[in-house]
Length: 529
Image (tube, rainbow, N blue to C red):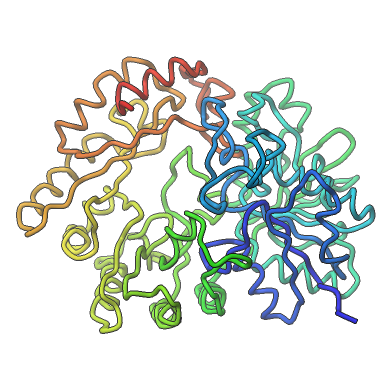
């Protein structure tokens, strides 16, 4: 008789055995510890029988919603339904053969809640854990921009036994070990997890957030909730939040080390989908990309990286990265090109202990890889922080000369200092200084590199007059291409709390545009269709 799986991963898209995809990493770290792991990917989630196809797991189901919140994947910032999903085969958001509709989407809205509730229908007394960005950012009471309302913790709505905060590799192994020893998920006290308890922990190692009902009555308390969550993270404390007669208790996040990342990323990955020889657009883009580090030293108000990966940098060793390159050469599609090397911000590699090194470790890493005979080219395809490039002009020239494609991508995010300050971004004068340096280096290159700039429209604090001259300003600075996005008030972010409250952390009133027609008009003025 075939032995049952210990853990069954459930996800609303094709399983990808790749270190850039959470399910690939989680499955491999569990297998490395001797656990049997099953996978149910892209289930027809409307039918509970889909979740019985592998039988009952010995330990628990683990929901992996993906690298991006399902509401962000399924809706535009102005509330329109998206028809594409880059993590699905052919980028098609709908099941093949079914007419487009809410029930035909491969990725359901609020995937964790939907999948957990369907698993409960199939297995009434099974234990369920969930992680990923969607879970992590919704552990506390949060704002849902598609519904335009405050929602309670995802632990309650999904009836989860345990929620995982952050990347989750350390936690999932500890959870599996504890479950194998007979400990129920709801009784675990594992760092980087959250549970739903009848009574709160009472000592000084916990920081209490404004309760769910308090935030419902005064949505501006989301700002206080954000501030307290950040304070808890900096002090290494847990948080507790009242939800009616229950308490959502989150244990402090575990520290990750370079050794942890080396071990995780040097496991064996096939860089393929589980059940298809073709590739989703997301896998195609990331097939030969390499994650060099995690975390970010930036303090952008609208970014989830700090909350999910941490506000400090943890880097892999160069030996570990080279080992991954050697392993990639076994892939049938390998042609000697590393399509991206970096993290949330590529050039922060190696800034684990020193945020202001005299010589950036990323420069040495690029040179070491470029000088290998088994590598034809290393691209830096993800964006770089222009303010850091001003500190390291030699690195900027190296990237432009040897590691850029047609474009170098940077993110000034806006052109008005009043808005940039609210965003937590450098001033426009710093971007001007960067553009002069970029132009100066370009004049000495045989092949000109073009400059692509990302900007955000509609961030709290922005008014119409802040946008009127944006296109001309960027053009005058020598920007060749502008990619404009409308601000998305995603769960758990400082910018989202400001969007809801209509004020900043100091209580200063901010203009907030909530009308999709006006937001579209602002975007059109910068980025015509």
